[in-house]
Length: 115
Image: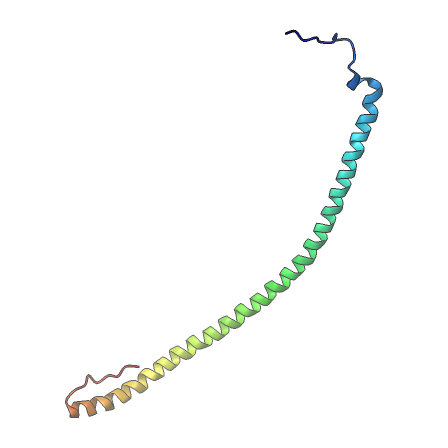
């Protein structure tokens, strides 16, 4: 099977000089239209991103406030818990001594109580 190749100096019909320029211009026009559409989409996306960034900023401030409030509450509970535990231990030791004496009188007791 042999293939026929056109002579190398003969222009192909698809690349004839008269049809190249209009086709290239048409292709460029289509690409420009696509680029313009993509730029419009990008502009809309950037606008939405800007609005969402402001919302995220507000949410960040809100969450920061919640974290600070939680830290304050938990910090107060920890301080109150440690102060209360210290006072509670002192009270329980005092009560434990009294209970220990009562338990010693009854015959059993370690002198401390569980808190």
